[in-house]
Image 1 (spheres, one colour):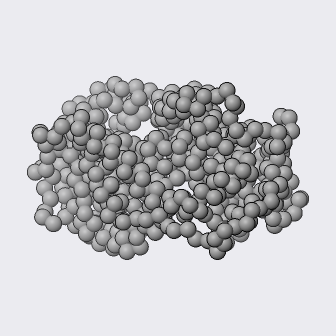
Image 2 (cartoon, chains in turn green, red):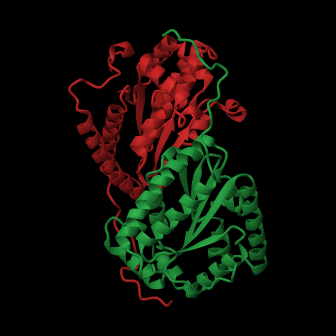
Length: 257
Length: 257
């Protein structure tokens, strides 16, 4: 894979793409995903792990809500990674992550992930560069282990512009339904934009044995379309099938009430 | 609460209820639930635990899928209780249950629950009657603990007729999308119908400090309507509100890129 420079990648949809037509396509894709998820759960041989990374207010929650609502909740769950607890810090950085990977038949969404351990921790210099290299290795090996066990991994980076983030952060101050998401800290992290971009590029260039999907995120409708398309394509490529009937008694006798 | 006799309770919708009009109402209820769930998650002060019990093929999975699909998966998860593991059996029967109750802000669905420990285990006489009484007490105390901590509990019993179950079990043998659910064991359990009804009635009459909702289940559209209505009413009664803006810096300065 060619080296990724985020500044050279658009954060907006191409000009010739029609918004309404795209939204219609997304709805159809989500219907397909619902059906494919049923087979994934029924066959219970493989699983799907969707990793969503991105800056604060880059639209991770919205991607999760708008692409994955509608799926049978028995077959999907979301894990939002927060600051590690004392117990988690007392283990290696993958310990808490390993615990919540999807079991066979399930879709799991990671809202943030083990990549925070080579992003926020690196940007703030809480870890040294040797540790960063070790963690890149560990992540590649961890993802390989999961894939070898039947877990398909999809990694999405919410590629937002600084202006797009500013608009989203400002909205949290005025929209009563979004005020609960406002954190002063997000404004402080924003000052480290350049350092975060460099750290992300290093992630893309060192941890891409499992492909990264860089998603232009300034318009939600385009972001949701790209994610839905990738998820649909991935589930379809698994060539899942409903299991056949298993019974030792082809014709059970009528039973008493 | 008056003593419950399941044989005196209808498993079908009242004759004067219009199917199409009811389906339309259910769709509107689910839209309301989606909005209420957003506030539940944003406010993060209370949680909702939905317990779904019922005989094999009584429509527990369908209730879960059709009422709760559409909700933001970041705010809801389903726990399907199976046969306990060796580690779980080595603890008290509520140990594994306690571990998966909802945290504040979340909706959790239990597909089967701690009630199996006074149903299947009792019907098969794997436990004695003294243990059953102890467990009723323990369940009442456990549910009280949860409610005192802000977890509202909704208990639904999928009230199906033996004929309705037979039709559902037969469908699993011929519908390719449902064959994965077929288990010979379900036909064996069906022979214990009467014993199960007695055990359920005993549950309703001993563990009703938190109300049981007996849901006529022979028609899915009516079942889904009743459940959606109860969930909507319950979330609405919580009088949830979006949190106000919390910030130490009312007007953050413009930040560098």
